[in-house]
Image: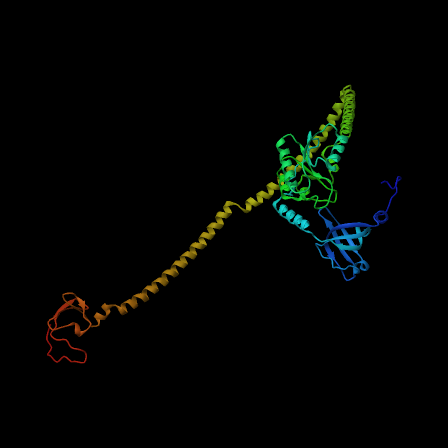
Length: 458
């Protein structure tokens, strides 16, 4: 919609106010269903939240007067139905819903089953964009999986006959609701894959209740779509209806008619596009030909006077020569500075200086080694003298030099330390400070007994 045919410059505030007026005038009262998130209720009494569904989200505000009339307390994750008017929050330039009333929406058994299956298949990766296949721009054969008597097939045929009447269609008739419908849909998808010449397929039906659409929420249909090698367009129900098949399919269409619009371009549009491209090609060829002619004309004029060309070339040579001289001078200056720097570094790192420093260090270390060895030898000599004195003090030879002897009993030469080891007539070998002596025992007594026998030589 064009509001201003003539150029009119608006401020941001003016444009925002204009958009706000349009929104409030055309969306004075709407009913919106969605899930609450980001709920915030400050002390002012107003309530702020986001209302969202799998495809979009919108900011909402419920002012204090309306919020006080609620019979329940909203929570994040709660699904609600709100009556509101659309407006625009000018400071942020965002449209929002001003909610007048709110009703909680309960989750039934089918809805809970839908949520659980969706979460499980999402974790398995069936909804991942990595598995989405591209829809061919101009398919030769289109497969359709739907009821042969429903409104969906009529809508698809009507749209295709209008947009591209000579496209080939292969219909796989199935039941789209009731017991066993999901199995028929999955089998039809597999059959179209086995056909081998189907470029794309549409799987869907017209609108209905959650129970009517439930066949497209069955796991068997989801896995059949995921397994399909042929790209699948899901077209189930109306624009507000979402099924598991929509999330698994390569492309979701809001309705069967929209699927037919998406699956093939209009023949008239394609023809117009080709004609436009042909015209652009002809214009481009003519322009290129004109540019070539102009270039040839300019060159022919230049060739008639070669001095002009030579003059331009000579001027360019002079310019390049001057540039070369400047650049060469800069390069030589840089090289000279670098040579000076490297020479200084080389002088600081001269091998002769290194050898001299190492020789001085070696001399110092040699002197330190000589001093250390002298001190070490003196300490060792002192330690040997002390050890020798101690050894001499405890040596048996020193004891023998003081008049003592060591008695060994023959024939085993065992050392005698007690008179109880001896008996008259035993032979002893005495070790003296100088030499040995052989003796015969005449009598052996303890320390408390005295020897009264006259002295005899042994």
